[in-house]
Image (cartoon, rainbow, N blue to C red; front, side, top):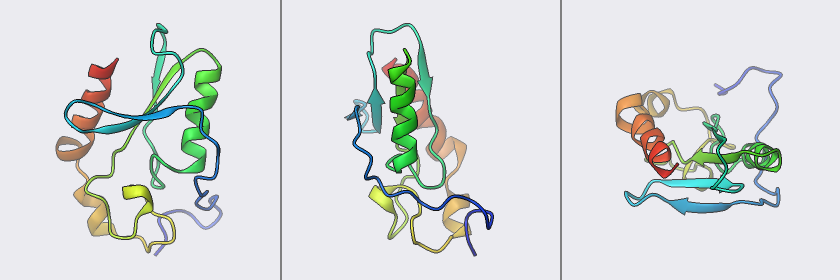
Amino acid sequence: MSCCPENSLPYLAPSYTVKGTIQAHSNGHEFYVSGDPTLKKAVLIIPDIYGWNGGRTRNIADYYADNGYYAIVPKILQPAMEGAVDGDGHADVPFNLQYTISITWEGCVQPRVQSMIEHL
């Protein structure tokens, strides 16, 4: 079983040369940032199934940063699925529905989103 529809673009390896940096909140939540943190405009990018280190994800963040936004991409999928990309996402790993449904809003996503809001 695949994670995505048949005609979806495949995983893009993180070969893109990023412009931003990886940082960590005081609680340990990691995130990728790009752009000037003193800007009054920010965009929070929630990564897709391929994760925060996918080539498209950071490229999109850098695009927003190049266009006047402070871009933040949190590392969402934690704990990491065995064989996943950079502790996050699915590359050539078979889709695992049980793992996917274990990533809940309350237990995983919301705390990381809250950390990003605090970072701002």
